[in-house]
Image (spheres, rainbow, N blue to C red):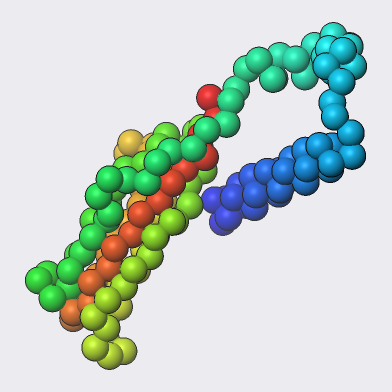
Length: 141
């Protein structure tokens, strides 16, 4: 549940910033002198702007992949440290579903041992389907 709340908050903040920046660039250009005055008046804002940056990771070179026709199971691929990132699925591909007994999934979670986000491709016992999963992360430093 915590992951859902954090994801929602990050999505809301990013959406707000995109809308705010879009409105400013359409209405009027930002005067750098005025910006410097505001930053001088609010040192905490200036410190934040000089501090952390928001970047994103590339997709994994190899997808998380399980072929249930060969053997059921799960493959876990580490992504980024959970304390400074949020991750999301970018690829979910399921093939070869024969019937309702075929069950495959892609998920993202935090590995309790390493503290890293991980993407997991899983095919349950008795399933013959194939699943491929991939993900990216927003990272703040």
